[in-house]
Length: 490
Image (cartoon, rainbow, N blue to C red; front, side):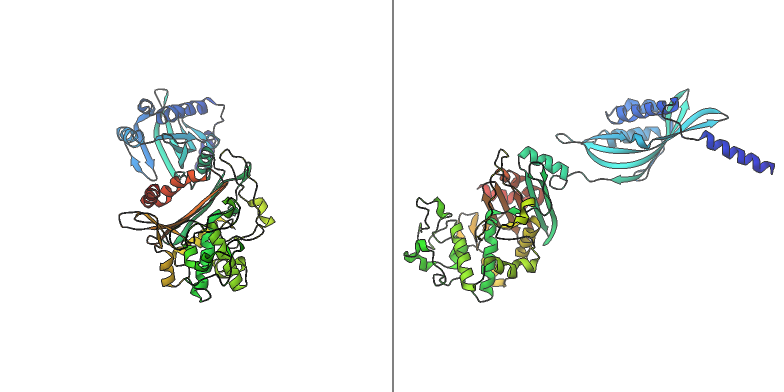
């Protein structure tokens, strides 16, 4: 019984002596001072002398990922070669709210202390901001040697690693970059191996209003591939013919007396060979007119695509919206895509911006256009691009027609059916099909690499939007992206 009471007393005494010290005590201040010299000065500024002075000659280090180091010399070598020789600067920060310090006594005399805590490690690269790499718990054994605190043992454990913040992946990094580029908002959809890998929206609808994931964008001429696919699906089902003359369905009043109207076909419209201008409003009298004989050369024409919309609507006695809903939007679950403005879009619309960040008025289209002003989300349009990449539900024959050369623009570029084709983007001779959309305050673009099954959609709401294209292309498509850039620059 007496022996039991002695053990109980010793246990109680050890509990008292091992109690955590207050932050105001000398022990606490001394240990934190040594910690600061070792890490804030030694580790963070690559000053090996601090480690030589503060680490005990009998030092041992145990790391849950890197193993054990059981000599001071080996530890110093690891520090010099593994930390001080990195291609970035490593920074350690102590979480002061988690520090616990327990004194160690023998016969009532202080001989050491245990320091428990959590520390965070960061990386600082040239030209970049500090970013978190890992968080870990630690336990340090400090011993008094000739009345001087020395780090005798260190345990570093429960490490949690963090990926480096990457532009177009990390929200904070990307939005700082957007401010630098004077681009309010950026939407990115990325497809790899035929599957959607990323849908992201960064930035603001307008100053002070964060852009949500379901931001509505006016995608300008990215409307045309939608209209084109509606037409191609009607052709595949036998309701329309690629080469039939379409004047029997519709003739624009402005050109009703021009015999060239009887030469127009869906193929000529989709390959931009109609001879019609891009926009009749740019003509002196504001009227539609032919500028050359249909089928003789290439000229990009928004007017021709809206002409096609009218042909389709009359032929099918159905609106382009209803046809697109039936043939594309509903099957793909593109639930936020519309040719016509809705008041529901007001609170989530990516407002158009000048290069100086000023707002343009918002166009609220009440009548559909087959060439321009489709309203959609980055998620919806990426679903569409992935669908096109994987065959678009078309017959093999018609799909090959769509992505084959119909008009040669140069040795490097041509037009298919509603897509332009960038040739030989890599050493394997691969190609990309591309379409862009550009209006005031709007720059959008989509890329499809049929052979590698990659796709990329980029939406912006600024006159500066094209400034993002190269960086995004290189980030996601690498050498293939560089190949596309090289073709576009030729």
